[in-house]
Every structure is written in C-alpha cells, then in structure tokens.
Image (cartoon, rainbow, N blue to C red; front, top):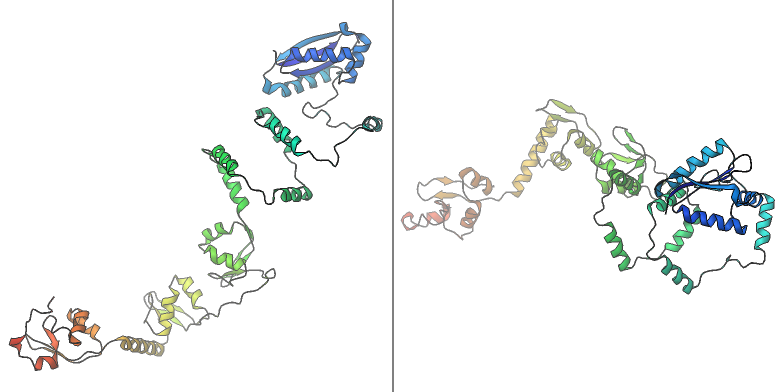
Length: 417
C-alpha cells in the first residue's frame, strides 16, 4: 500500500495531457480509476472522453512522489500547479482543498441538475424519526477524527461568523438544556490536568470583563474614559469594586470623588450626598494652612486623614488630628472647652480618701479615673471601696469611714493586691 502522488498521462494526444492525483493507497485508487473509465462513469468528464477516444493503451500510469499521509494535499497542489504551467491537465480543480473554488455551474448544467431531480423524493421540510436518529447516533458513537480532518474542519470555519438568525435559533435550541451528571463527569475527566495558556487566560478574562462608562473626579476634574474590566480599574486606582458598581448601576452618586460623567442613560439619578463644611484649618507641625471648604471628606482624601477623626475635631470631641486643628484661636478655645466638658460629663465623682498608714488625704473630686491614673491605683478596686464592697485598696479608704474605725483595728493587707 503506497501513499503518494501519481499521474495518468495521455501519450497519444500530442500534448501529453496529464491527470494529477493523490491517495493513501495508490494501487487501490488506480483500480478504481480503471474500473470507472471502462464503464464510462468516471467523475472527470475530460479524462473519460480522452479514454473513450484513444483507448486504455494510450495512457501511462506512474508514481512521481512517495509522500506521508499528512502532506498529501500540500504535495498534490504543488505537482498540479507544476503540470498546469508545463502543459495541459485533465484536472478541473484549481485548489485541491476546494475543488469548486472560482467555478460556477452554467445555466445548462443547472437545468440538467434540476431535471435529474424532478420526481425524486427530497428531505425538504422533513425530520428524522427517533429510530433513525438512534441509528445515526450508534453509527457515529466512538468515531474519532484524525488530526488532518480536525485541521480541515477548523480551517473551513475560520473567518466565518454566524448570522443573528442562526444565533437566535441555536439559543432557542440550547435554552433549558442541561448536561447529565454522566456527561459532566466525562467533561471533568477530559479536562483534568489541562492548563490554559497565558493567551487563553487573558482572552477569557477580557471576554468576561464587563464594560464600564466614563468617570469624572469631582475635585480635580480628571476623566477616566470608558473601557472594559472595571475590577482592574479599581485595583489600579485603589477603589472599592462594590462602590464603583453601585455608581454604574445608579445606586450611589460618587466614591472617593469619582462619579459618572454622563448620567443620561440611568433610570434613576442618585442624589449627591450633603457634604460637611469645615472652617479654616492649620497644621503647626507641618506649617500648613487650609482655607475653609465645603467637603471635609475630600480634604481628608487629599491629606490622607481619617474623616471620622476630623469630624471629631470639628465637633470638639478631640483637640486635633495629626496636627490639624481650626485656625481661629477663639474656635480652638471653644472646642477645647467643649472637649473638656464632654470628658467631664463621662467622669465619675469620688469622695475624700485617707491613707491608713501615713494619714494622707485626697480631697473629693469629679474624676475618679484620673485620680487612679495619677496615683497608680486600680480603678475597679477603688470603685469597690467607694461602694462599701471593699474596706481599702493599697491603704486608701473612704475618709468618713476611716474616722469611725481605729487604725489598729484595720487589716492593711486587705485589698492591697
């Protein structure tokens, strides 16, 4: 069984017209040629007419190249082009892979085809029965295409796009269909151990990535043009993906200063937040001054500050945040007094205490926690002493109680932990 390229040459027509062919089994192919020529039914009408005119003895059959199966098409095209340049050929096809490429049926040929089909049953408008479908399925089960066939099928589909009508038909056919557990298991086994190439991974990510509209920054006026992959944009700009998707969906007005540049396509336009204004601020440590503004959150973003702590400064809860405080001296004093008043409101008053060893007295005060910090005392133990649940703590007891109890009767080790 010989695989290669062969020629059939007419030695008596004066031009040595040639028929070029290829086969994986040249001997069997020649037997087929001779059989159809003798019976007058050869596919090539020109070769058949020459055979009828000159007879079988006028043709010479020869193998011109032994070729591997994978290269048959390529080498046949080479020899066909070469013989077509040198002289006449019986071959009708210009391209081996597409025999009818560049050719059209004449009107007479079309009429012959139409007449030959008149009265013959056609499959137009019919469907296969379930039994026929089962037979076709059994016939194709286990069939494996070779690499050459797969490559041909792939090349035939390259550059082709499905029409919208075809896409809709396929969508309707596949709607509601699900793979069986057995099919899923087969797919899983088939893909085990496979690794996607970097190009495939990148293409898949670009396909999955959704488009996003253009954004504009409220403070700087910077514009981010529309594009694909909002998640990648958020990573690049250090933004929260959820917040940016809320902006795209019209659920949020802005995030860290970024908002939609065009809101005409939204069903509902979100209202902007009411920003908190702030007075003129000063940072004595850095030597900076900031004029009064209308958006304390934007100010915090510029200087990398905590908005909650800056609001606490403006509310008088704390005096400064990273050195920033109101520039107005009167406002500073007022906020400091407010902060002291808030701290005093949370402080708990205490009675007078006396030390049972040295007789030192602590007068009554308004902040027992501050007193404990100054003297290194445990606040919880001092609270117990105040409430009568404990006699003394590190020698300190309530002054009124100490006046009615002789010092010799006290156990100074009690509560001294």
